[in-house]
Length: 352
Image (cartoon, rainbow, N blue to C red; front, top):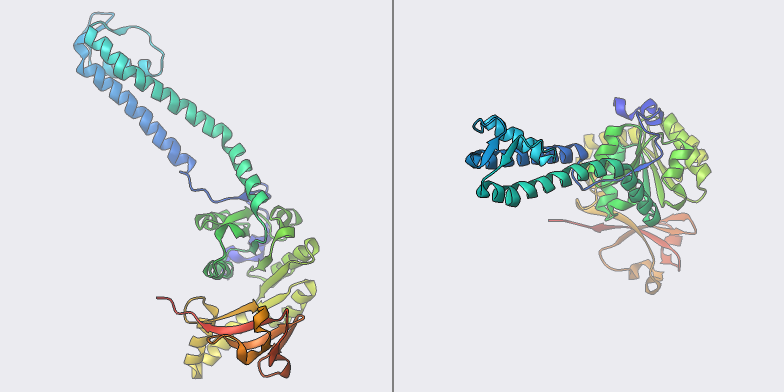
């Protein structure tokens, strides 16, 4: 078991922060890199002014009457560009004064812009983050909440993205900050906190979400998350993963609409692979969007109501869902479609 996916990690106290704020992906340069670049730009301006003073040193005079040295040039550059200006080194020739007007003064202005801009960015970073979160909350709806960004959570996100769900409709909850950083790196929003916490799920706007994907490593963590999610939203679709088959009923009683048994499913595939490796390949294609065979579900169109044989070619119907009841292809109720039915079908989706 990976340490980062344990129940203690997923349900434990977040390391830093209150765990209730949505952390949105950022496209701009990280703060430390931005400050480093600005510092380098400021140093570059000082070097530039020092070079100007050193090249035109014959036009500058020291109060002591000594020749201008390279150290004096850097001293003059630092006090001039920071607007300190002690006056002990001054331009006296017309050329030096013209150079100061055309080159040193603009450099001084740019230096002040860098200084003020860095200060304002530090002061307004928290405000900007809150504004971005407010915009996200205003626009987000029918989003997917992924509780746990371990192997199962990442695989679920991969499938959602392959099914053309946009990144801004996926929100990841995990107590590991590095997991949230990885999610942000893929353009996903995240919450660093306890996935079974009422406050965290409210911050994820579960009431307006389309589905909650519960993917911790431990079954007890899954039960707690499902219980909390169902308490907060009676109508949201909750899908959960468990390791042991005997916990399926417990999760369904807790409010999960669908429960996937990860260890048993893997064991079945291993058993099938012994004698039927090609069958396992077909099942893998069904589970991977765009690999070959795909399975999907859709609403029956009005003009398609009637015998299943009249449906478009290339769609192999394996089940019909009618009033929340599943009718398999070999049942009489699946021979014809009715208004409001949903089709579960196979189709080929080869991608070059």
